[in-house]
Image (cartoon, rainbow, N blue to C red; front, side, top):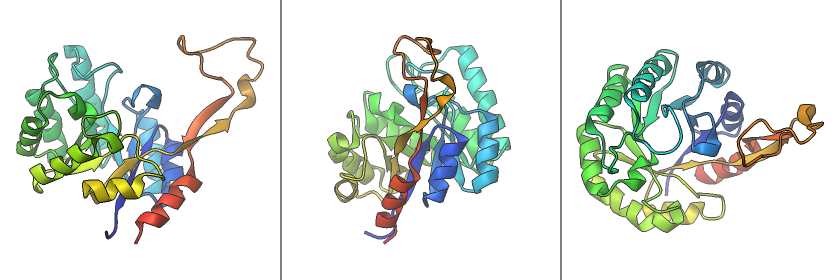
Length: 250
């Protein structure tokens, strides 16, 4: 199979640091992983880059809930993109669609051009999993010189969409990279790589970490109506990722 590149989905500078210690090749830096990942702060990028020096792809996603943004939201995304690239991001992760779910070519062109002019990579994220025609979308993204797409094969998880991912790899024919991500874990990793034929994979691997400062909560919550526990948070599990990198480095 050869060397397989491992990208770890990170929600903080600490996540990137743990992923780096575990031997990951690349990090995707976000905030708010609960909502699928939103644009990270510049502070988290600066600290992550300073502490690890590893390759970091920064998410550009101004809000949760779809990929068709208002003019103000897109303008903010462009400004975030410029700042992230100028402060050390090795590439950007983004996805722009029209209301009907089709690729927004013009907005994608703008972000792809920013990356290209900076000499950085561009990634169209899992918005591709909800487009009506992935072949047409891959053609357009390849023409725009987007580096790769992150996809679960238009299914809820990579194992369910593995056959489509394999078709994407064959259809792309080297014009654009295909990065499987979503529902990949230590149990299905080898099967996913064999089934899709991919030489890179996007994974998360988090554990609960304690923070007792809010233990005396008196029923107080600081988020929305789902009310997650306030005495813990999620962080990349470096032991788990280390086990994966050892398997992939062969």
